[in-house]
Length: 516
Ligand code: KIV
Ligand code: ZN
Image (tube, rainbow, N blue to C red; front, side, top):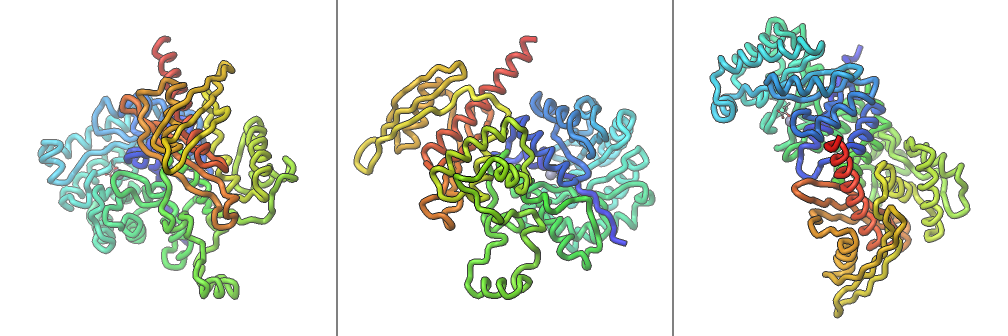
């Protein structure tokens, strides 16, 4: 009988903590919904005490997402634990996840505490958390560089204090699989009450071994793996959820373990996180990269046509990668379009389908056929739930190799007013965003990052669409936006406006809240 492993997803906490991966509240809720659909056991929704925004999103996820445990991270301090509890207490299954470092380096230089003081604090704070919440996880930060004998003592103490999960993080991605597997085995053999708790592992990817270490630990008896979608996370990231799942699935005879995960939801979950963060996976990323299932070389194509198993160890369908069954074009009706959306795994409210369908018709007029990637790109521009304070009405650019680029942009404001401005810039994109800034009064907004991808260029050549992602900052805060169009300058303007609209919406909401 295969052993059931729990999947603890920390995309919204460790993942969101990584540079450039911050998400707004609506996006976090969308990602949390995808995670619940995927079947993770625990969603770590954030670090409630980190900021009022973090608290709000942890609380919103705890209050809305069902069928899964919702955790908040907190330091082993009373005020952190109280805040975490306040944020998660309305969850169906709340979990307090508290941590304290146990390595000599961290204890001496960061905590400035002796091992005895650390032990005492860990035990006391787990007891404190356990008085609030029935499900407490304790993490020994930097466990892989801690003294094993001290670790056994802390683990035994926190289990006696009420921790039902003990997490062994490889915080700095220093471990190697054999050694990490031995560490888990030794914990099982040397902690007398270990059968009263689940051993969890949390591996970072600094040496590219996050997934390998997690799997080795699971094989050695760990019962929970902490991981993130697309492997996002601090520095080089965390172990990638999709890679762990497809390893367990593809090599079931070797691992003999199962999870609650529905692997056919992996592709959608990956797309959701890409959209929410604006951070794309590298094309050759295992499982969810653009090229993960592409067979370029002729000899491989020949083999795959003869028998897929020649070069394919798992099927695209097993991760929910859509394949074109049906061609959509300008004569396709709403019913066919809705069916395609459902097939691609989108669950979209009626009024948004209306808007996306209208955009689909515009696109179908420009292109002969509309591919699945086109539809995904279209959908990615919708669903933020953010009102359009500014909407692009039209733009004209004048640009060339020997002239200064000029752009005239007209926006429609939420009051229906049409405002037009002209600006010059370093190329058509810069000129257009300068014109937008003049209209919206955006002198304090900084464009931090901008990326453009051509969707389906290989299949459709010049018929392709541009999909842009931008990241803007103001007063040290960050917002993402995305936009799609057959015109690449238009896709950038749309992406910029979507980030500006999110920023405007959030700042207005905060102002209203603080006025109450
Ligand atoms: O990497 C780490 O050690 C962590 C803990 C707080 C679980 O993220
Ligand atoms: Zn971590």
